[in-house]
Amino acid sequence: MNFICKRLEQYTAKRQQEVLIVTVEIADEQDEIAVFRGFSSSLMRPTAFDADVPVLPDGAKILSIDRIASPYNPEAPRYIQQGLSWEAMQALLSEVGV
Image 1 (cartoon, one colour):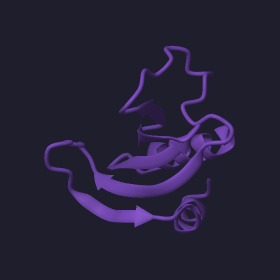
Image 2 (image 1 turned 90 degrees about the vertical axis):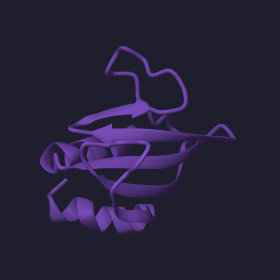
Image 3 (image 1 turned 90 degrees about the horizontal axis):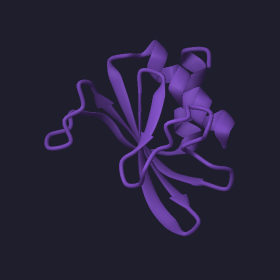
């Protein structure tokens, strides 16, 4: 799963005009993770200060991915695409070579 997180971070490093909001399930609890300019941060739980600690742990299940135009405003997000599956996101990752 850490590999998946790294790929999403690399994607946003290459497409800096986008923010990804990844809805995941971790140990039967839902979480939302923002990925922007090569970094990931949980929107619902504390994120470790150590960048080597994965925000997406092994065993996490990706439920959906939203592509949002930056800057990200949680009050009024400007969606590019909503509800992407991991499979659909992989095609976009391939487009930018990550």
